[in-house]
Image 1 (tube, rainbow, N blue to C red):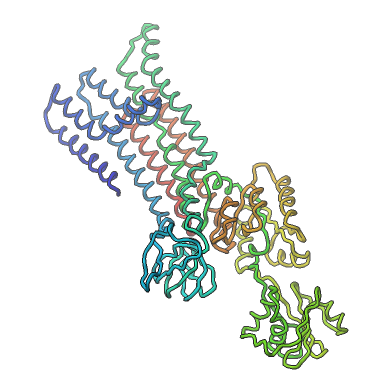
Image 2: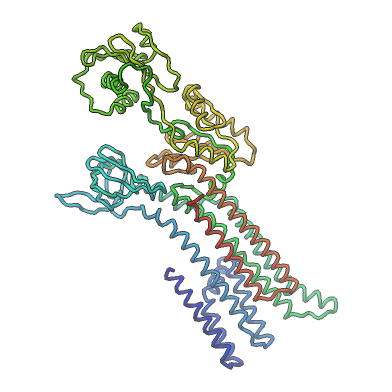
Amino acid sequence: MNKKQKKMLIRIAITAVMLIALAFIPLTGIWQLLAYVAAYLVIGYDILRKAGIGIIHGRAFDECFLMAIATLGAFFLAVWTKSGDYVEGISVMLFYQIGELFQSYAVGKSRRNISALMDIRPDYANIEKDGKLEQVDPDEVTVGSIIVVQPGEKVPLDGVVVSGNSTLNTSALTGESLPRDVAEGDEIISGCINMSGVLKIRTTKAFGESTVSKILDLVENASSRKSRSEAFISRFARIYTPAVCIGAVLLGVAVPLLRMAFGASAQWVDWVYRALTFLVVSCPCALVISIPLSFFAGIGGASKEGILIKGSNYLEALAATKVVVFDKTGTLTQGVFEVTAVHHNELDADKVLEYAALAECASSHPISKSLQKAYGKAIDRSRVTGIEEISGHGITATVDGHSVAAGNAKLMQKLGIEYHDCHCVGTIIHMAIDGVYAGHIVISDIIKPHSAEAIARLKKSGVYKTVMLTGDARRVAEQVAGELGVDEVRSELLPGDKVAEVEKLLAEKAPKDNLAFVGDGINDAPVLTRADIGIAMGAMGSDAAIEAADVVLMDDDPLKIAKAIRISRKCIGIVRQNIVFSLIVKFACLALTAAGITNMWAAIFADVGVMILAVLNAIRALRVHNL
């Protein structure tokens, strides 16, 4: 509990003790009234003050006003009827404050549950001066500076490792506990925790532009984007509160006057009491508190899992997602080309790779890098001479005195060498050594380990159509789509074509269904913006992703897409449960009160009870880890 909550708990305890004591102290007359007024002021002075401020500023019709009128009215009735029953008015205020304390604690619990994410904000950065480390504010570190991050410290700014190697804990950003190894030359982002070695990092962004700052800003401002459910509650409250006040006036004044007009007894005490009870029951606390709390808890729970949702409006839209469109490269596949096979080789496969890597050693093309990576040893360029690149065909070179040709089928045809076609999908590098065919190497983009499972989970979650968009050749695209279980594939697309394809899919879907586009967030900004929901995957450090997308997944795992949808649906389900439950109970209690069936004790129990149940239901939205 915070200081304010502890103070309220003390006030509740003092009031309860005073009520118990007054039940055994034989006070009468003015002394009895003053004693009960003192107990009332201990528990309700802040409500009276807020009600007064609301009236002064033209905002009279709020819950403080309703509670003040109802409880003061109960005191007035006790004085008017000379019954001396002041306990009811104080008890109403006491139970109301207990409910408010409970609600405050629940909101605090929600905030504490996402405090782990807020803990990624670094307190300082280490700058080395005169052989000593000096702690400075991260805002003061300029781009290009060298900072030192010691074991156990947070990485304060984005940058590149210039010396050292270590393991990073990225759980605060990604929601996953799997550590990430970094070494010299690796990019590193702020918010991670250095777990082992000392790192020296050259900063590439100012603190205000760093990943940690953008994430914190995104989460902190998420509550400013209201959902339709929250907008409905705001509109409802503006109409509902004045309406119940008018209803109370009609019960307390109009009904007795009508009875008098028809010659019946006015029964002022009975009808004024009903009107006051009607006001107590009418407080829309459960709705006003639980709906925003549900969204806050849902966004907070998602944040802990490395899923950043920019506002409750996007959370609500995500829940209605029925069509998911994927970019292929970097989203469903790793976007990194690797050697996957060596076929039709007479020589040992490792020897074929060695010749290919040496022949390609002067090239910076991704295919050349893939070959060098597969070779896995240091390249001795002294072994290679006479490198000649034939545009659109490949490379010829002399390796260890042997003539080596590495390239596509056109190169083999050009050199007059018979070759074998490959049945696999990918980039095929045909090899010839001393004019004799030596086999071919298959290089392809690797499918992410969880991509197929992610597609299956989306379908279990109610997504009825999955589509893959790619610029790859049709044969490559169809093989990947077949392996993953994607419903439709549209291939050989230029970047601008993706927007047009999404436009077509938007026109085909049902009006109430939403379409989500999932991309890497770097080259897909126009499509992310055009879709009903833009989801950026693997966006750690990607400015374009955080800016363009509505939902940002902080790691590369496609399973998080289905999880984000399930989190949103759980949250929206809780919101709807609270709205229906609160309104049914509220209107039932109002009807019973107007009919004189319930008293003020029952009314406050109903009001506070519904609020507590709604709040308890709302904080369930925090529990998303096992979804």
